Image (cartoon, rainbow, N blue to C red):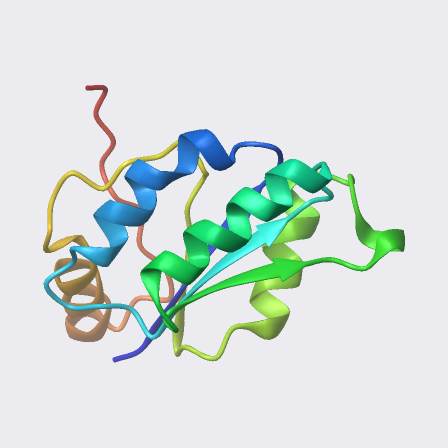
Length: 126
């Protein structure tokens, strides 16, 4: 069961690390994590590159071509989905948190057992 996680982002490198830590600590790691940048400023891109490098090969920064930048998170999700290699795709906002370390395992298990095409997870406010 392979999962690609797609995170659209724009100028939020300082805020995204808690989510990356949550994903990195999953009991069942995803196949890949794609941070899709929507045209952040140069300093933010440098920060994103450093973050991705700290988390290893599982995490990749996708920098969109000039003509696809600053068009919003939906376009970034679509760009990520076109690159993703996993059987399943999870869309996660850059300010989200995964507070359970078995989020990926439980979600994939539910998809496989039910034969469902998609899954929505509960949300809570910390």
